Amino acid sequence: MRVLGGETRSPLWTQIKADVTGCAVEVPHAPEASAFGAALLAGVGAGVYSDIADAVRRTVRVRARYEPSADAGHYQYLFDCYDRLVCRLYPAYVAEDDAPARTYDRARPAGPAAAGGAPGEAGGAKGERGAGPAPALAADAGKERSWRR
Image 1: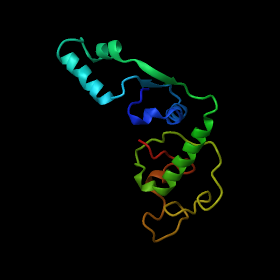
Image 2: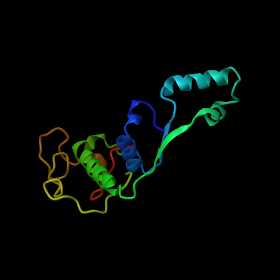
Image 3: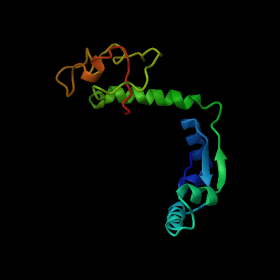
């Protein structure tokens, strides 16, 4: 993956991207990526390069490369927590025909949500917007769904 722009000035932020995605992140040498890209397209249009891939291969130089850390598993745990939270807060946004991106093997957290007592889930508060089982979740009782498409 290549990242561009001002955010590439932060080695910490770029390393976090590599850790979270599990992909190597490259930072190109060109400081003004938009202008550089426009110049490459102009070069393709003028016949200097045969196509965009040729232009990139001949001109783009990598200034830095960040590899994912071996101990970056805590980001996956934090993302799983976030994903579960979004599913509970916005069950109406999970499409009925949306296949789950993944299921969770870990036990559900303690509290009202674990017992099905959260609003919008079976056993939740009545009279609230979205109260009752969410159609998308009722079909997969006991499984969690990802809000992402």
